[in-house]
Length: 239
Length: 177
Ligand code: SF4
Ligand code: SF4
Ligand code: SF4
Ligand code: FES
Image 1 (tube, rainbow over the protein chains, first blue to last red):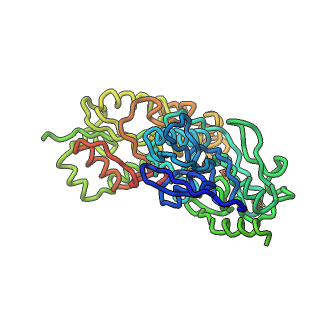
Image 2 (image 1 turned 60 degrees about the horizontal axis):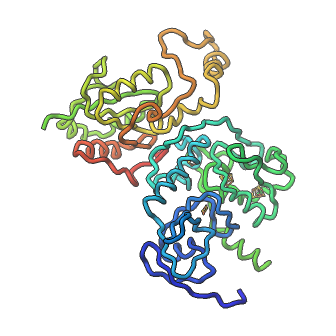
Image 3 (image 1 turned 180 degrees about the horizontal axis):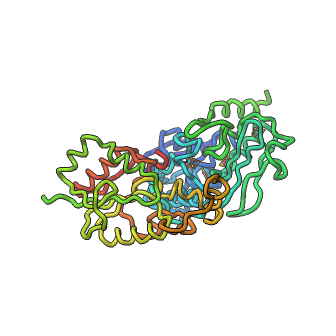
């Protein structure tokens, strides 16, 4: 940062807080140990603001703002956990659960899944929308990894980590809306991918049981994320 | 105080939720002083009675018979509890949903059968096209996720309801717990 960054003051859930003007609402909240739920966001990856779980209210602004991609401004009065936000956040989770097939009881990520944990934390006990129960593929063609589209929430963390950190860009998105899905290379089986280095980064950043190691049984798939901040720093400094 | 009339119902589930209910062990004795079990796979009673205070329902709605039962149970119960993931999300039974019923039956009873291949036709309820959660058919008052919900969770739910409170499950259970 060449220019000096302004220090500003604002309130979050009534608490007076000072922050740097180049910080996002989410960064400031976390620095002050205040909780905002997130899914697509992962520190160390580009911010896409796509899942909308982190929406917050700012007094005087009509629309809700995604905390992970919104910079704080002087004098803002931000609500992180109002009734209205809780309702919207639960609806988002319900849509995610109803869009694909989540059968936690037999999922390799049961007990270690961000989607499942969020449902519990935010008190989402059932889905009001009609479940779609789509027929989706499981690709086990890779030697060591599996992609189970039944569990994918299209957060694109895999796409970003593979492109930005590993530099392979094996993953991408195909299709739109409800037909969108993640693909490897030019929609080839993962096992036939020319670009995948087998580094396993996508497995570890995936919040759900969609990307997992082969051979894991129910509840066995835990993810490691510690590597990400270090690698991001190394890329920035070109070590 | 008169005893609360409690019923339990078993639709398309593995009976794990009922096993969990029995896992309450000695707390069942304590509950026995407060409730009367008027209908359940665990008691000998053929017809679902009128004026039930609390009905705990395990399992998804998968057959025409399931649907008939849940409609009757709703009509005759003050409070309906959706007990366990199969009741709440259709869970494991829903894994057949992306496929046609005929394909599922063929897979089980013809492709993988060595003796007498052929799906049963008499004396078993007709499967509906999909297994679906209870609340898609009737109003549900309390949702208890879990596969199965633990004995502690079920005890808490019953104890709260008997005290006239709506159980706040919070950290006690979750999908797949
Ligand atoms: S990915 Fe998460 S929410 Fe989905 S079935 Fe697995 S544990 Fe449940
Ligand atoms: S294993 Fe590494 S290279 Fe292969 S798809 Fe995942 S992140 Fe990309
Ligand atoms: S596979 Fe995992 S990381 Fe990739 S988009 Fe789906 S849920 Fe996100
Ligand atoms: S975490 Fe902010 S939009 Fe997904």
